[in-house]
Length: 241
Image (cartoon, rainbow, N blue to C red):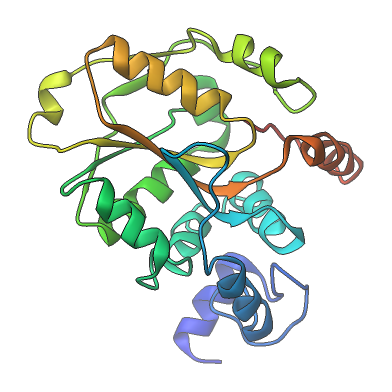
């Protein structure tokens, strides 16, 4: 085992996050699962809005990755997902992001301080960092702030989700975006878009314009509740937006 493999083994274990096999992986997926991931991210998904795209569908493989990213301390999976999507592979998603504007500011959906203390990181910030890197944009983490902690939205309908995050965010420091041509709000999972819509409204109240959305995964609202039930059986403490 070389040094790279040894480090990977120490931090991430010795099995593929996707299929559980003990084949060589880099550092989370074996070659077969990696090929499957690349195929899943070949084209972005439009979740019903022309100003929002998602890089992958939620399926068995991507769901395992996002759960590991959020609840097993594997925050770098966010960058891994971006790098192996059609953004990192210079495909359609990158072309869409570049068409939205040059020198864009990438704003991660902020987590509440209580969640940050519990988890130690914001996975959306990691995704925003990688997107900014791929698109020659700039990561901005001091514009959006989550004002209040909100419970899980998984079992809520679309209207209830919107109410649940209404007023949860505020925007400030407009002077920090004077040189940016627009904003991309970055989230990990997009279900109904309630969270990113709440962020967008906060930004607009603060006077920002040209606001877009990019999420790592798109999950159909109907499947989110079923996944939540399955997660509870496995002992996962999960929440979705």
